[in-house]
Length: 220
Ligand SMILES: CC(C)(COP(=O)(O)OP(=O)(O)OC[C@H]1O[C@@H](n2cnc3c(N)ncnc32)[C@H](O)[C@@H]1OP(=O)(O)O)[C@@H](O)C(=O)NCCC(=O)NCCS
Image 1 (tube, rainbow, N blue to C red):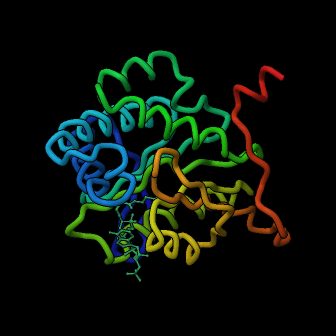
Image 2 (cartoon, rainbow, N blue to C red):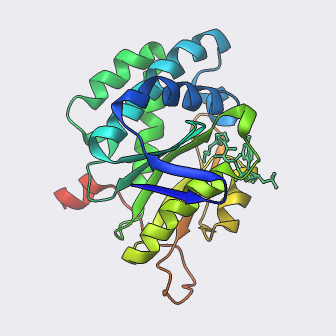
């Protein structure tokens, strides 16, 4: 599907877009507290991030849905929450360890913490959104997300994401999300804000949706 919002045209990404979209993800996420925590060494971060984001992008194309813009300046990776989370997809853990090598424990820990605090209520999960660094702060990210939000609102479907810094947390609040209790990643890691965007007609609830890993829910 293709849709135009002001000057931004959004379309579904395909396998042919993997190269440029991997580059956007690796560049957009290169700086910041989560990157410093995951891969402190900058030279290693270039290599590991390139491999890691190729893996998550391909996972999104296989199991979720990936949007981009006509000029390939942005990418978002969403999962309807009926899909298996990243860590539970067959072969994902082995591929993650191959991609991230000695940094695999931190990436695995990140997945596990995010999964443990994931809302139980059905929703679509925004795993990643990134805009090419030189095109940030021009409305592209908001337009890309508004495109998805319009579709989710039409389905009466909430959305959930983890915000990795206060600046993008404010963007999500402007787009209709509210922040839940923050997570602080173990081993002196950064703070992460869990963000929930409810159904459009939902009365404003006082609390944040209950969370818990799918695997725990299955085995109890
Ligand atoms: C967050 C991001 C997707 C927003 O897209 P964008 O096109 O730059 O954003 P828009 O122009 O639509 O909206 C601007 C708002 O986005 C946020 N933003 C812009 N650049 C940002 C950056 N480098 N890091 C974090 N937030 C940013 C701010 O809230 C900004 O508003 P402000 O200028 O008043 O502070 C994009 O900046 C990005 O790729 N950042 C790096 C990767 C990232 O943090 N992804 C989200 C992880 S939760």
